Image (cartoon, each protein chain N blue to C red):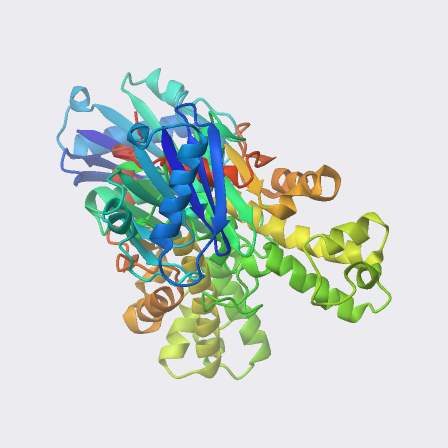
Length: 312
Length: 312
């Protein structure tokens, strides 16, 4: 049995995972604002183990998905944009209290590993998972192992500039894909169009600019609102543009889209994106990338943390 | 001993390659305009073998670099934009006349393999080679094998859109990186700036728009011409932007720049690009991508064709 813990900026989620990569018990909690992340992770991991009726001795690995860069060899969290954890020896901190093998992995890598092991990309030779959330995360599995570049960094596809001089990004560049394709980007576009279209239905749906969500524009578009349609069209254009860029660079067998926005259904989301990938991607063979919806939601991150795909 | 043949749109180049990945003899010729490419390749390969004082029986492989997509398993050229060779069983055609193992590879993959085996990327765990020519070619070697996606396609990085709605590309998209970063793109930018700046030194250097080369703007910039500087600045901005995008996606240990433009020297070319990669790429570790100039020129394509890096 394995334990996987997904560390988010706000929430923690732990799962007891069996040899068939199924989550058999869970526990959830809040990410502590200051320090003691190791204790919070430990408490949650133990809770999941207990909930699944397993004994601590049965656990062969505790895997942790981190929203940032990790040093896998030394079990150190190098850098996380949203949690204060610069150069934290998290694996050692935990092992001092529970002597179990601890593996750290980047959360986008975990999501890719999870979908590859147990979700939409099961059995694929190469699978990329793109998660549309606060930013855009991307992970790639090739031949059963995570694709990692120097420094052990996976594809930071969100930080691919598609609009030179465009929206400023936290990474320091301007016009990064994630400024347009993430849920955050979608909300920004929604607000921009609302400011231009005072008569849009989106004002009624969201009430205020502050209350705009990633669903506002899609909901308005379904109700026939022109402003909503404009936002959705613009969003899909930028999302699809970056997806085709990724397909042209990596040509994964399967490309899975995850995150809240991916639940918008086929007609207004997956179908137009598939059309873009099919029409615009550069692959003159018959063996082309298939675009699908991720299946496991947040579970992918737990499973991928529990069963890391690192080439030995 | 191996033989490598680099098939270009205009020229053919063959080399006899030894076990240390050195070219010990060469032969060059023209790419035939219609059919009989197999005969032209065979003749040139035999010439290189003869020039090197080797016997045909000593040759353990004939590798061919193709400017397009190949089916490695069946030795078929699937698609080449610049040579008429749709679905051509090139390996079989050649083997009917010379029973030697024949391997086909995409030319960008060959260039990457060559620099990895014997050039600027020797010994790297992962190496990307970006070649600035008529288009922008890219090949990636990871752990001793070419990185290939579905359909056996390598990174088609030139077809990453960086300017939505920008310059039309042969691939059908608009604003592809290669429309700005290739030698062709550089020449287009040069012409555009010349048309706006009738007093530019570039007019004296090139005499006419038709005679503009990839060197015109760089030469003018070195002589203090403002128009030349504007072109070089714009070119480096777009080239660097795409390079940082690639670094963020692949994080290769070494990124080699090849093609004629890469000979422009450090001050006006490599140094500013290195600065962009260092300042803008997203890698919070100390193990970051190094940008270097490719070392082997066209020889990389011959060596990489002769010694293909395909995971068995």
